[in-house]
Length: 490
Image 1 (cartoon, rainbow, N blue to C red):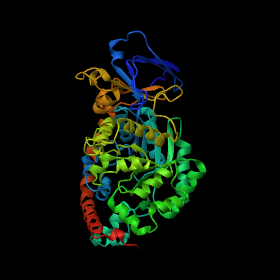
Image 2 (tube, rainbow, N blue to C red):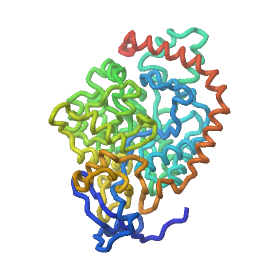
Image 3 (tube, rainbow, N blue to C red):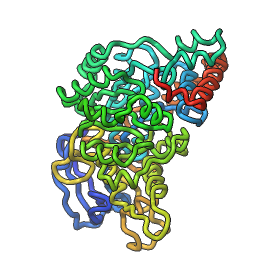
Image 4 (cartoon, rainbow, N blue to C red):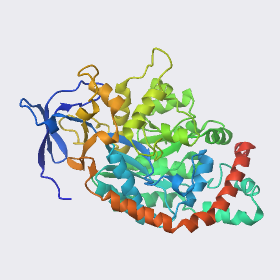
């Protein structure tokens, strides 16, 4: 793709510079120079019909995802409790990391997302090669990316004593389960150094590398403390899962009598450099602590519904002063990675029953500004004004409002109620067009999809041969958690 000239001007029928907080303005010219918005000025002349029907607004942010690019249902990982679903991911055939990531980022770009957190799921191969492929996909698609490098060193098989879990399996399956789901890990300091090595290779203008301890239940105290110290020293962000499920909460309560969040605070883990994903099972005192430390919390409602995790207490988070963002987590309800649909789902599912919903469109869109920070580690962004990054989506507002009486609803209300990927006409990131007329410019989605589908079908035998072991492992997990063995301290 040929780079655009350093200065460009785009004219649109309406501008929504800060949805919910500023009203939309009419015909507007946006001047972009070297990736930043240089000027926003009104246009007196009548615009051509195609431009007059366009609405420019800040690009959305996906604050938590995994770049799967493929519905796990296709290889047999059905929607079910997270603790049973994760083992089923091993059924996934060996596919191109580049193709999968590019497909996922292209899908979210077509829904108006200009920045995304990618929590990398390693295939067990060379992590540097995998992350290089992820970053190349992001560069080709053209979106901002936080590459969260996976870090873990405990509880690979189950939250708690693995021997108790293995004892629930047939003797003939125990070693194979351990070999498949519990690979060797590096010492904490070596994992820190590996993140830096990946950053040296991958970081650039649109790509930030972050520490990604998978979750406290999967990381030893030594690893968590090493990450906290490294983040404080380098300023590098941390991205982690936290209290996604009831079993994670119960494990933490049993193994950290003083409170897991208190421990994390004591070691300096909680800070404005931290994003935690999910937080479904946080209590009010913990929310207050996260707010006091400036932590961003990514709510992932569709994923939580599909993986039986529960519904995050969004209103309590907001009332506590937590900076809430929204993530797709690769698990949108319709599997279409539509960030506008996820926004609308959050707006409706978290509203208080009755005549006072206590949730405003403004705070929904503010969550995407927190999402930008979760990606870029910069405090500003996510709205359109001179000096800010030229990251904006272009929506076909005329098509969205064909059956709407003019001026009966605010533009923000219309976008919240009607926004969807099929209304995205364009997406610009850092002053460069990424999506044009609904098509991603930097990659060939059809060719990538055909490549993945061909590889998927050619490796069906892998799925068939591993399914019995996965099913047996899942039955043992059901028994382990049902008997409360995760609450037993070793």
